[in-house]
Image 1 (cartoon, protein in one colour):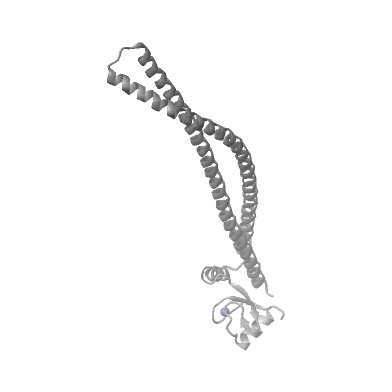
Image 2 (spheres, rainbow, N blue to C red):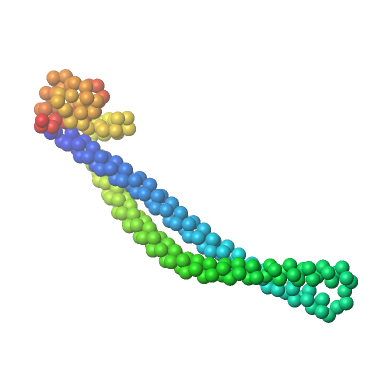
Amino acid sequence: MNEPLQRLVALADTDRLIRLTEGRLSELHGEEAGLQARVAQLDQEMKARQESHRRLRAEALARMNEVDATDEKIRTYQRKLEQEILPYKEMEYLRDQVVLLKSRIDGLAEEALLLSDQVEQDAEKLKEDEAAFRQRRQALEEELQALLHHRAALAQEKEGLLAQRAAQAQLVPPHLLQQYERLRRTVGSPVVPVQGGACGGCHLRLAEATLTRVKEGREVVTCENCSRFLYWRAP
Ligand SMILES: [Zn+2]
């Protein structure tokens, strides 16, 4: 193989590695977004869990306050009935109220107790949920860190490959480099092997004379159809 062709092959190899690295980098980018989304979801679930506990606690407190307020009302009405001289209608009304409130207060107190038990149980469960949450979040964070580490290493690898490419490109004669870059933009793979008498890029059969020239390897030969650079690979 002649020297310019060797250099084109080397450049194409580096470009392939750069493409692979870029592909892997973009995959990692997607994986990172996925992990970030899972962390966000986990946080949101925990927030909702804490919020549901807070609501339960607020409900229990409200019921307890209701019991206290009812009790206070009963006392106030009774005091009024005992200590004040009231018009008959008001007295009647207050008595009815006392009976009504007394009939309600036991039920309310029972509910308040039940709710307060529920709050205690839920607080225990919340502690477990929070511990599990911290563990899962920690695992995700570690996964994320490992991924970022891997990505940084790959980015560095890519920098190295780009530097290598720049050095290799300088060694290719300018007119060949120009053609190479044009092919890279249009067809993606500028240097291909001959495969069974055909161009390894466009797969069209090559003229016998072209095949002979490629096989001899004394000059840089291109496909007459797609202009890709051709090299001979032992069948
Ligand atoms: Zn071709």
